Image (cartoon, rainbow, N blue to C red):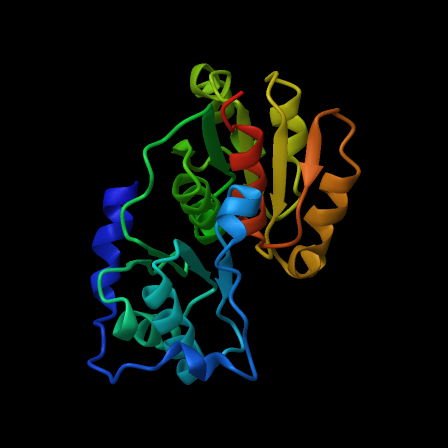
Length: 240
């Protein structure tokens, strides 16, 4: 999956731009360059609601310090700004995620499996997958295993049961995490998505369903929060 992600970065060409000094961060950002040493995982930059100029300055500071960094929720303009300063960064259009340096670390620890109920859940699933990958875990993506066709989940049980943790991404009725947790021993990180018709209330219905899961071993992150799911999954699957 990482090869696919790396290829997609070319969908937004880096702009040729002037260097922005890290001092330009004063007044709107203070990067945590020490976080990887202190916590074991690098900082992530949430791009939504940040201007291209702010992101150029942040990316320049990242390059100056050589700090491993993820940029999340990045649209085409955000990516253009970051790639102007970090032209070799990996950009995955679907996951809206950039990573620098572009090569993920050598995987350690246990396997993380990300299972998506349907194709419409793929952007959130890929965000979780890539976050866990760039935090140093071996990851596999399982697509289109929603509860409308239970045989599809049963057909992937061998892989699912090899995982240290399974991230389950689902919208609509949000039933898949409960089903999954009843079939495997590993903990399940459930991610409700804003996919579904009106009564899904943009992810509220699956969120409540997952919070009310009757199967033990299910933890729930916020709606569409692939980053949070991938991060906690990477921690659960860390080397023992």
